[in-house]
Image 1: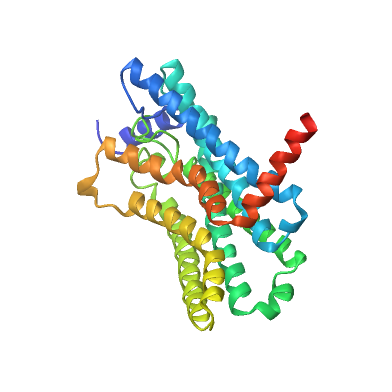
Image 2: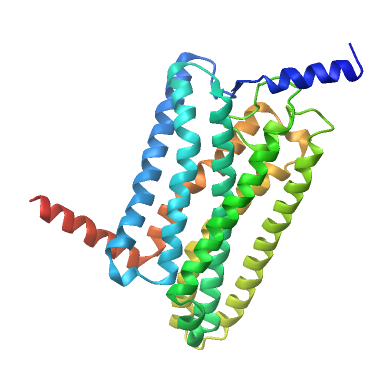
Length: 321
């Protein structure tokens, strides 16, 4: 059956979808359980690492500076991001199912889109923090006072929330004509659009283009900030001073590189190289690895944060004794 009547029937069927089917990492029971324990270990490590950073920064007054304030927000984003994806995937592997409810899928898509944008925005703000600290140190207290930091954080959270709300509302208002099997182990916008009626998804393309422009703007701002930072560092006369200045930027630069490289590879890889197994690995790299690895990157290269964390842990141990 073809023509308008068939199309209306497809739209009606799409509107009655009550659940989606997520992609699974393994088909055998043994591999499903292995996937569960692997993801559980990664999830607990991410919660522990980011939780320690948040607690240490909140506890240690010496870390109540703009750089650590934004790092605390970044850790909150990472906890939220990995908590949006992994628990459902682990539950599906444990109970040998692929189901996710319609509302659960919408909530997962909203939270993931919200936190991905928030992470990029916070990484951009942190690049600005490093630029001001190194290139305009005399104006650091003025440009990044407590009120300015709160305003930037609020603008980041608010912009990410609004962007995600628009995407989620628009994506789930599009009729679905191509079943309910999502080619991903969590719900995200591109995969839901693949299920939509072909002439309806163009509404979302405009919003995706706008978000891509914002992401490109953030990327260009980060690159330009580091160009200015490197120029300023190279003008520092002493080698010790250059090393100290650059060491404060290295963790942020490593996190930005990890975030951008995995995202670009996921969304810009050639279609000819695409396969279900490769897509699963790539999606794992950009959605799970950064939240789990970011605390390790910051703690390894930041002696001040390491000392404060040790102090916190020792104080807790002594109280228990």
